[in-house]
Length: 384
Ligand SMILES: Nc1nc2c(ncn2[C@@H]2O[C@H](COP(=O)(O)OP(=O)(O)OP(=O)(O)O)[C@@H](O)[C@H]2O)c(=O)[nH]1
Ligand SMILES: [Mg+2]
Image 1: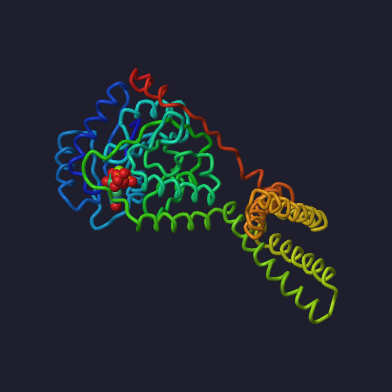
Image 2: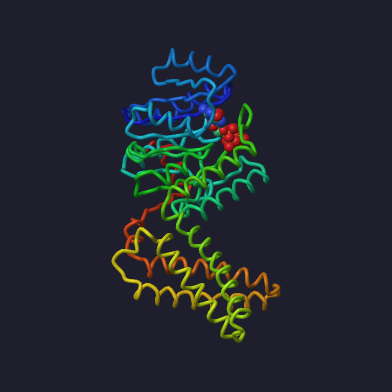
């Protein structure tokens, strides 16, 4: 079997026949390709009857019905287990994902690209099928995901429900998604090196109802938290921020002791308190944040670099604060922006320089390529 098309479905009775017909029409251009369509269905309406009728007459259509179970992402994981193809393509049942793109996606997979993602956000693509509120919610969700998980950062449509992959990408991966966004689970836990994005226009739903809800947004947030906690390199940034915040408390406590216990002069007490906080941050970061990669370099190399990076960080905070003040922002806001910029600076530098070794090994750069809609559709139409 060459290709398995996996479709999660929930109460889509009016969309099943049209999508199967359009898949066959689109795949007709690839004459020798063996493909199957797997519906993983959780429906409570007549969708299952429609699917059963189709499966009885069309040998390419297969149905797995889950009784009393829900969840788009877990349905897709079930599809990965059932599918026989060398390549998988996942798409929605409601025709928002145009089956006409299947040949172009298949060709890319056949050429060896690990993951192919039709994207609404590559030049030539559009997310016209969504209303303004849904667009805003979807944009916010994407940005939060990209901040939290480094593997999503260069993928323009990382929450898409339409994507293709080599079977091997998920073969040994322990997929354990919550809710809807199966692609983020695949991007974080899958084994891959190349990603190709193809621009496309997301379309309005033809029939049936949307199952998107606030509850699903909450599930997405829980899913992100779980992925961050399972991914050492993403967890690291959050640990670094928590330790940085703990440094503020250390700083204040030491300052109070020096001022009121030892009656030290203000400036001296302030400098000493900052140094102790810096040392405390160094120790926690060495023991927790970068625990797995400290080996090989001694503290007398790492500590001075850490201190130098922190001092430049303080300078950056002040510079950014002044710049913000000049453009009319009040000092506390300017200081907050400065802290944000210097936190990112310190994190990146410590990751690359102070505790560098493993980070290089882990990065194993992923190559992302892009294709505009015109090229993709020309290829889809001509079946090349
Ligand atoms: N198996 C399964 N499929 C689901 C479940 N929830 C949604 N789906 C399917 O997942 C796909 C996406 O759901 P939609 O309701 O279209 O979500 P959406 O595309 O974000 O929302 P709209 O733009 O309003 O259509 C569709 O094919 C649904 O039938 C579920 O719990 N189980
Ligand atoms: Mg939909």
